[in-house]
Amino acid sequence: MNETQECKTNEECKKVALDRFIDSFILFKGERYQAAVYMAGYAIEIAIKAEFKRLIDKEIDKRKIIDIINFLAEQQSINKEIKGWFNSTHFSYPPKTLLQLFEFFTKITLLHNSMHNNAYFKIIINPKNSYQKRDKNDSFHNLSNYFEMLNKWKNVLYDEYSEQNNYDFKNWKVEMRYSVGDVIKHDAISELKQSLKFLEKELQIKNKILILIKKELESSIEEEQEQNNKEQNNEV
Image 1 (cartoon, rainbow, N blue to C red):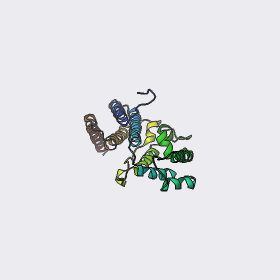
Image 2: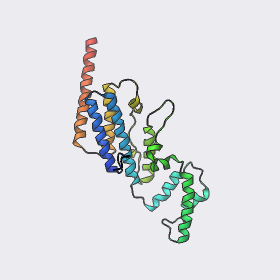
Image 3: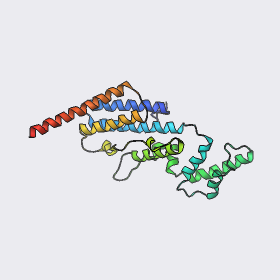
Image 4: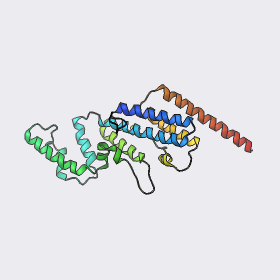
């Protein structure tokens, strides 16, 4: 495996994501809540990469080529002649004659030049550098932007797409990974549960260790609630 990459395939990324999540739980058990949240976030980043690997490797029907071109061309100032060519009956893929091949190369070059700054294009070509959002106040990865792009790619790639296929990931507090203050146990449990949910639901990881971790997290929630109830009763 390339040393500069955690993983290169969907299955490799799923394994790495699972390993990082287990690491986060071990940190949680050691009451290293800040580190546990950070590692749980890392597991999510690798899990998202796994989803991109899955989408990138998906075989595309010829009819889908037009949908993808139209998707990438949306909101772009593309030459109307180029867009019209791809939508016309003259568009043949793959080209059948030498002339069609040369014409195809010309149009593809023009299209690529129009697309290379498109966020939806860049995130597939180089997701590591195209999903980050940084300014003077922020230093964390913009996961919500990543999910938005994943959902839209799922939309254009799948005929059976429906709203139910959207990634359900609304409560992740990404800024907590880089917070200055201490992360309390309650917040750590919440973040680990979100990470666990993504691994199980989106990546479809079936693993006995995850089942055990889920039970322990639920047990921790119950213990925390009992402790809060005791404290409230003592105050009364």
